[in-house]
Structure formats: structure tokens, C-alpha cells
Image 1 (cartoon, rainbow, N blue to C red):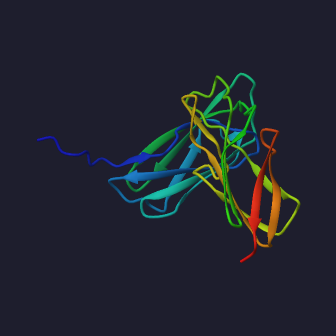
Image 2: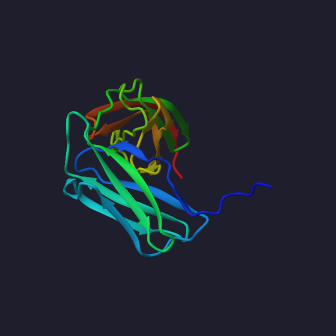
Image 3: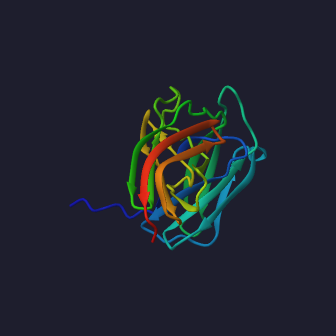
Length: 212
């Protein structure tokens, strides 16, 4: 009989990704077949390339790496960061590509309006060719015009602000929810500005909201 492996192992949604300069990444991870210790260590083979590099335990089995790089290289030089759980002596490495390829397009793939709630889903129309196994992120600012009272909530994935790309296909779109706090009837423009990639996307939606 073959049983399930019991050796502790660290897993993550992504082990290799592109990193934009001075952009903070929160890389989630979990441990299997063990509990995380409080004495987590994360190191880099080239530590001078990072201004932030630390690991934190969130639960008994999950944690997050905070990472910011100050280094960029046109040819895409790589660094390796290694996470170690000192209690279980479990290690896992992550590859950071220091050549961020900006997204050249972003479009609204889904938009729904229900009363005073507007849901928008964004995806790239096309992807850079060198994104295999890497992740691209967007850093969004969402506003509406005319500027009526509203709240914005982003349905964030594991990079916090992200359209994540792997194998040249999007598997995590960026979703935002806008909640109106004042009655409004007519056309409303939803504007997303992405400072990281230099993109602006606008979409008009028809709203008929009498208030709450």
C-alpha cells in the first residue's frame, strides 16, 4: 500500500514572477504536513537588490512574504529568494525576474449593475510574449464621473493588486465593486487608472438607483 507523503512541504500559488521596481509584493504560502513556526527566515542570493524582504506567519499553516525590489535589468536578470521554516527545516525557493514587462492593454470583460452596485471585471486584451510562468500586476485607482458619493472595494487576489498571468493565459482577473451612496439615474463613467502599467480604461454604464 502506498500512503500519502508526510514530509513537510511549502506551497504557493506562484514560485516565479516578474517584479516591478519599488512595488510591494505579498507572496502567500502555506505549509503541508506541519505547522509553521514563528521563526521564519527569508533570504536572497543578492540581498542588495531588495529594500523589503521578510516573512510573516498568518495562521498555523499559512504566511506571506513581503518583498520590494530596487533593482531592474533590461535583460531580465534573476534573483532567488529562499524561505525557511526553522522548526520543520522546510525550505522553498522563489525566482524573481528583474525585468517587468508592462501590460499594453486592459479591457472590461464583465460589467454588471444591480441597483446601486456596479461590478467590473478587467482582463488584458493581449499579453506580452515573455510572461511564461511569470505574473504581471496592475495598481488601480478607480473613480466615477460624475463624481457622486460612492465606495470602491477591490476583490483582491494573492498579489493584492493584480492581473496574474501564467502560461500566456489570465487565470485571475481584476474585479472591483462600486457602491453608490447617493441616488443617481443616467449614464455613469467608471474610470480605472493603472499607474504601474500606464493604462487608463473607461466604461459607461446605465444606472437607475433611487437610494437606500
